Image (tube, one colour):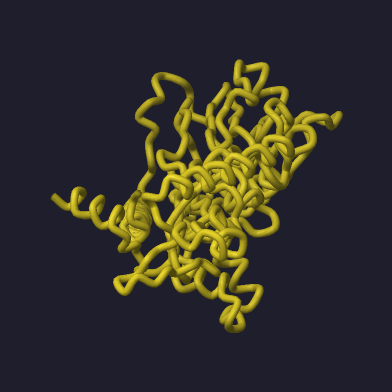
Length: 354
């Protein structure tokens, strides 16, 4: 088992590194795509004006709609130009376009959108046009953030601080790149999140601040827990860590004391004085990790959860805008220092330390 605090420290360090790198790369530099070979440059805006429109495919998901809004907003902030959004099905075809999301144009250029991973994106220039597309549900959204950062030098340093260079004329190199986050779960654990989860005290942040924080985190490609906001679903739970209510410190969920403790106190952790410590919430008690029946019970309950998810989201079912099929499930210790001191657990612990 990986220590939870170690994971948090690593995640915070990675996030901090990303912000530092972002700040250093946004000092007015013209970022080049080293992978682009040959190919003509395109000019998205010239002297604060543009001939481009953002063209969207049929029935975009909520995250893809957000991608269009974010792209238009920051292109305007950078260039001063208005990039209007039009549906690909409209009778009027723009002379030049940024094709965003699952468009027929992207498919005609050999991009099979359905085969892209849920967070994978493709950014490609084709003649005078630009394609930004990704898998569902967040691939296109992440493609937009990748484009804004690497090509425009836009960065979000915290929920109230952004770096937006002014470039009324915006030339771009030809490019053809495919990207996907290297880590499955990306989560910055802070007191903000603690406040959101707390049931014993009122929230310390108003709705506007909460939405700004969520947006900051998603713009930096975080996907853990409640980092989505209403327009950026799915977040937390589902695809990334299984059921959000049982996503961490959940020994008590998989081996519930209210069901087993009365008849089988030996399933639960024993303290140094021989007292058994049942689980009642994520903070209390623990289980005996060497008891063979405990493993069987926990595994059986986990399989039931997975089976229920697969019934709701069977293989091949179209991805939902709000909840994709879960792919990762967490089984982890309670949020305390309780360990079992039964002879079998002590023997195992001594062997592991040697």
